[in-house]
Image (cartoon, rainbow, N blue to C red; front, side, top):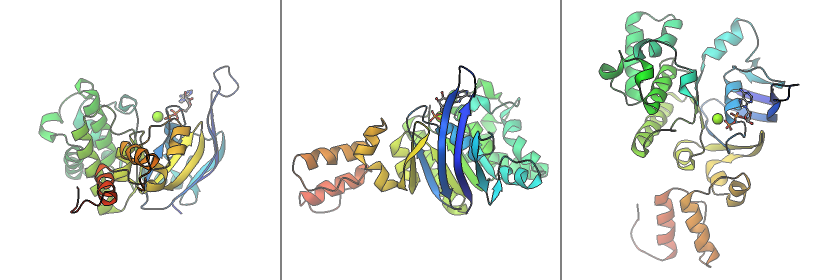
Length: 288
Ligand SMILES: Nc1ncnc2c1ncn2[C@@H]1O[C@H](COP(=O)(O)OP(=O)(O)O)[C@@H](O)[C@H]1O
Ligand SMILES: [Mg+2]
């Protein structure tokens, strides 16, 4: 087992008036090569959970194991394992601190002890992966970039490390729909090529639908669902209960079902919903 989360509880500012329970006895197991989405409303504990998976927070109780070793522990083994987990933060400003985009993206590979030619090759590759032109942005100061560009630089700096586990916390916030699709498609293709483990936090259900095979839903710091993407994203009752919008194709099919049509509702991509409607209406030919 690659990652085990055992009875993980996280309390911020414990024992002060600002005390906040962010995670409550979370248990999870994640296998190498899985593509997982983490879903939940704002404040449900998603960012706290993924910071634990990267070994950046110390549990109040419970633990996170990476290949059987507690990830936040001291010592060379845990440090080595932590380097294999790359987390692109929700707020990229929290992650960017170098003077130029090049230096920012080069920081991780340099720390891995790679020679400068390999570092430069990785920087170019990573910037292209996230849809930035290396020639145009390499010498810019990160803080002169737009929010969306900064997020891409933060992601590039993680990709350049070639992590075995890639965690993206709200990767498409602040991106236009086209840029978003392109970015997720590239990340998806890279995942298939390398079979790395991919964990994506998002409340954009369409993003998750395209990218992941398993969805874990959080509510108030607890895991309230953990199952195949198709099952979780078409569970109208569950999604409403945790305060999330139902994917529009599912809502449409649900409305047809309530009007007495015998349609399946677990079709959350627009093209799938169209095919399902065509099937029930006996339309010929494929709809895509
Ligand atoms: N650094 C922090 N200090 C205190 N409380 C925090 C901190 N970060 C998050 N929280 C609180 O912990 C809870 C979970 O937050 P978070 O993990 O960021 O949720 P999400 O990513 O799902 O929006 C929220 O109530 C949030 O206000
Ligand atoms: Mg968050």
